[in-house]
Picture: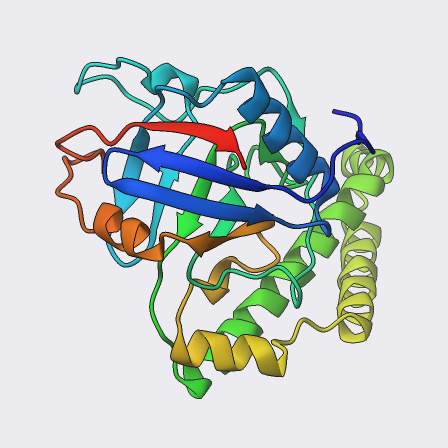
Length: 253
């Protein structure tokens, strides 16, 4: 998906059976913004469902397979035949209540954390204490260190395989220790910290701070947060799909 410079800041109206939600798209995430606008213009989302709803967490939609789907159909894997590179801007675009974010496959099969071509979620979340936020910061930095280490390990794959073939366990251990130290050094210079605005927002308004720097945030709700609240309270089945379908259409306003 190439960045199309003709797009300008636009709001999107998500019309649902529970009411309307208006979202603003961020300039800081142009690939996600332009892709979302493209799909809205194509009518891609019209007739799709909020197929995954978890109370006090988020509401998720954007799976084209959800159109007219029977209640027993497994949803959540549909979408166009492409992904979108991650666009993280942790202190500007974060997981506050009402954030519009891109869903994606897990790190085990998607180590670069690329986003789904169409699926998205809107955050509800909860409020966090300062101590809880400090703990989440530590977790985010541990995750970053592991991610950097795995990337370094991948870049030394041929050397690692050669050492294993030669059963050079001593050198293999030295290499691993070297990469661990490199990862620690990098992360020490790129420590993830919540800004004063994030701390205030997560403490008073709420959100899902543990998803920051993990999933791309590309917009926010500017009207209709009460609709998001109603949807996240919907009764669901064991697959987190609302018992009564909540469908949507979208338009640019």
